[in-house]
Length: 158
Length: 158
DNA sequence: GTCGTTGCAAAGCGTTTGCAACTAT
DNA sequence: ATAGTTGCAAACGCTTTGCAACGAC
Image (cartoon, rainbow over all chains, first blue to last red; front, side, top):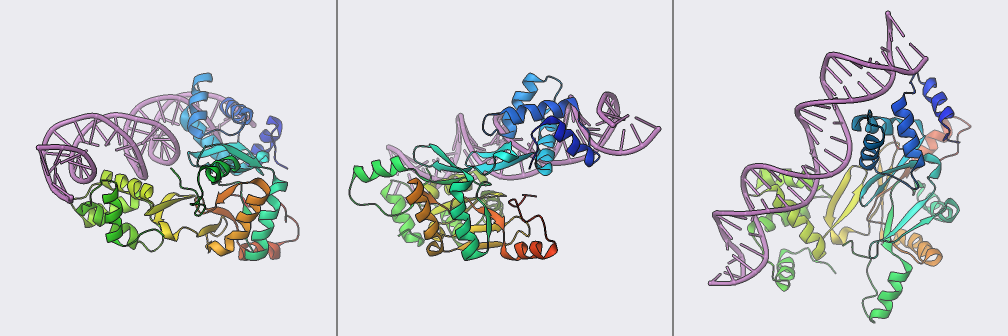
C-alpha cells in the first residue's frame, strides 16, 4: 500500500511536482531505519550529527511532508509525538503507567475493539494515533497481592 | 469519590501539610468552572488577566499539584494536554480527524472495550487519558456516498 | 531558467526553574 | 517562627518562519 522504497518515494514526490534532494534522502533513510519510532527532535539531532549539511528545519519540514504523502505516520505518546513508517501503523501501543512497560497489539488483536466502536457508535477508530495507557497485567497482579481493598478506580498517571 | 468542593480540597491539602492560598483558590475556581477541559497555557492566560497578582508558574505548579491530589486530571489531545475535574474523567473522547467533530462516551459505553482489553491482554486500560481519533459516522457515510472504491484504510490525520 | 528546497538565524510558544520575598498556619 | 508558596525573570526544549542563496528538474 504505502511505499518504503526510496524509488517509490521519489515517484510519489514527482507526481506532486516535488523534488528528491540529498537531504530528503538522508532523512528518509534515517527515519525509515529507526527500529520503532523516533521523535522529530531526536531525528533532528541525529541527522545534524551524521549529515553535517542538513538542518533541523529541514527535518521538520520533511517529516511533515512525508506524513502528508503517507510515507510516514506519527503517534502521540505521553512524551510527545513519534514518527514511524506508515506501514508499521496497525500497532496499538499499550503503556503501563505504573512500570512504563509497553505492549503492542497487532491489527488483528485490535479488530474486535474497532468493531465495537464501529457497531455501537458508528465511529471508525484509529487506535494507532494515540497510545493507550493503563495498568499492565503484572502490575495489576502485584497490586492485587499487595493488599485486599482498593481494587477500584483506574490507574493514576504519576 | 473525588472532591470538587473547595472545602474538601482544603481538607485534602491540609492532610498533606499543604496550604490554601488565594492564588490556589482562584486557580481551582477557574479550572473547575471551565465547561469541559482547558489547557494549562489557556488557563494561565485567563488567570493572569482576571487575577492580576497571579503568575503563570503558579498556574503550572498548581495544576500539577491538583493532578497529583486527584482533584484534576489531564487528557492528551491532538492539540496538547487539557485539564478537567477528576470526576469528569470516564469520558472517552472520540474525535473525527476529518470534520473535527467530537463525541464523548460515558464510562458505561466504554466498559465493553475495557473488558476486551482486560480479558485478552490482561491490560486495564484508561481510555480517558488519550483521545481516540478516527472517522465519525457522518464522514464515513459521506465518503461511502462519494464514490465506490477506496473503502479501505484508516483515516489520515491531515 | 524555473520553482521547489535549503540553511541560517531569529522568533514563537509552552513550560520549567532558581531564588529571594512573602504568608498561611 | 516555620515551612510551604509565590513572583519574577531567565532559561529551556521543541518547533516554526522569513528570506536570500541554492540546486533539482
